[in-house]
Length: 212
Figure (cartoon, rainbow, N blue to C red):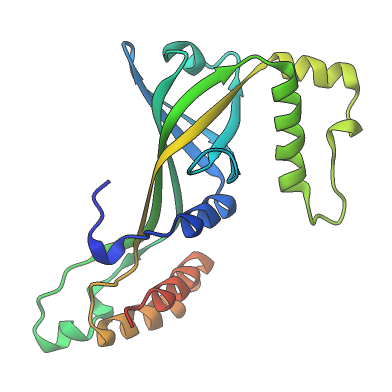
């Protein structure tokens, strides 16, 4: 991923935090059959491996797990808040007019060694962890034990687990860091006045990422 120095996030914990908050990733692999991508929720285990490990599962009917070797390099893409940036917010528009629209966004790329597994013990533990992670804090939570055991056994047989041992992390926070303070002020103000909750969230990130 192309990352200008001003947009780079070198902190692995910061990138890990982002993955925890935005766990839906796009798993991308290449094989003799070409590129293949699957969207899936993933769990990050920070204590497994030098850079952490991602765990997830795909439907057994999904051909993805049959298209890659037993151990292959893979890419997982995570994305977060994003917003269109109009040049009308820039102070530079009035000063010299040499401005154009752009897009602010966050993107994380995770590279690593991928393996698929049929191990029912792994699958059951992974599902329990995944459910616990996303049911936590709900007024009424659901657990795997709430469903009939026979039904869960059938569901486990219908999926294939995966683990990606992370070898490299890339974090890109493109949030107007290359603009002047006056231009950043305009972006924060413009996004902050939007009726879109997403735009207002981006406004907060732009302010937080303002070069000091």
